[in-house]
Length: 376
Image (cartoon, rainbow, N blue to C red; front, side, top):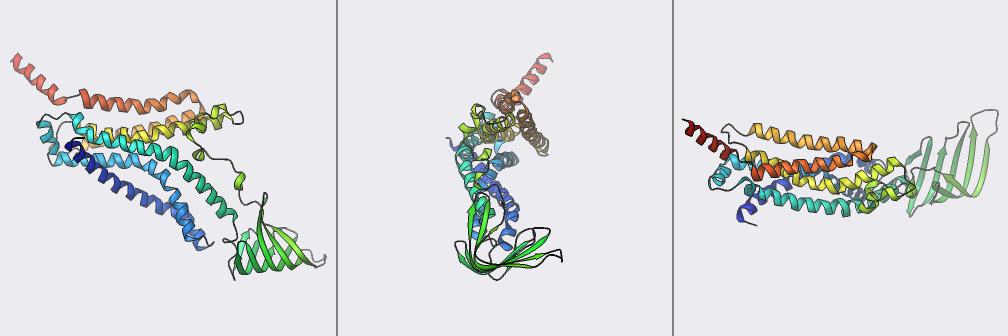
């Protein structure tokens, strides 16, 4: 790599890191608000809160990276124009393509890194996130059983424990169950333990009393002394038997989904689109980097600023991103439209390469001036 390429790539990379971490911090704050209630009201441990929110970051990084790189490239080349650095380079005979090599190299490097993150890191992170999410929703021992507090376990059901002994074991238990419309049940027990079943979590009570208060005054109050009694909290989520999401699957599983006879056509389309996007989305780092620098490198210099060219570059990026979303929705319905996703990647890339390698407005303008002088 030449010194010029290193100089430009270093500036772009620094700007990329600043923009990326700024965007990640903003998104992390917004996403963490979904888990704050679990920490303040339901006793979710801080370390689990940090782990849950951190597992979302790889996916968000892959989404934000092309935009951050586009902003960084646009800023660096516009600053170089304002400082007359690009003017000096062009005067020295350096072609637009040679000026764009720094952005091109960095786009290739970040695309390769995002391919790794998208296909290796994200599936593992999504699987871990799903396991922790199941644990948070189903492991009620640390969410429900807070010592000396009444906690709503379900609608119309309240649980009180005097002491949480860890590992699901509790003592001094009082349960007020009003889920049935025709009666109210109050349970008290010396000890208990939370266990998990395919139907959901259950609280096993030991040495206690069950009091039933009917709503109808004509019915009698009943009381039962028990050695062992089970309280069913119901299925709070699909648990470990839930369907594996597309983000948790490997690239090969997604692209070979059509071979699975148990999947519907809609599921096959969704998995195939997810697999194709796992390949194409990281490569948009290269496309957006070239879109950002092409207009500024092949456009004519304007002393008043490059606002018009920057606007066109942003518009081109938005169009490519919008087409990716629109074509993705079409492919969800019919795989027949799948080539449109690839065209949306290759067409902008080919246009940028053509403009950088073969389009030279200064040379064209000079030839027109020479032709005009000859006619005179």
